[in-house]
Length: 135
Image (cartoon, rainbow, N blue to C red; front, side):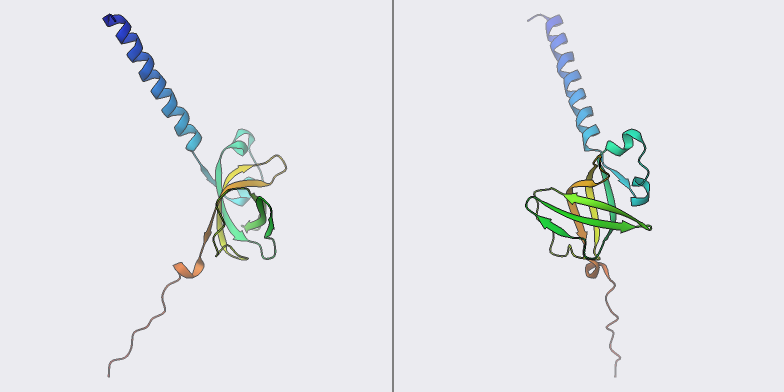
């Protein structure tokens, strides 16, 4: 191969790797939104991958084959969620627990999540003051 051919091949490889990196970075972006923000979706923003946090509404968890449906609430708004991920939900995913869901909005205003993180409130509470008086 002559120098010019090697140069062209090197440029093609570099451009290809740059393009792959750009596409990968774009696809991995996840935007955080509040439930109130999602009640008024803005065009293309509604189709981005996003995270939403809230409190699981008591009595809303329904388990089906291949999915779990529930409702999260926050800021006086609610959002129906359908979890279709392959990972099992944490044991502390229960009524009134805090949850962070990741996925996309569906056309029927349901949030289709492929990841759910449940926050265990007791894990983050301050430990009670256990100082003993010295005699």
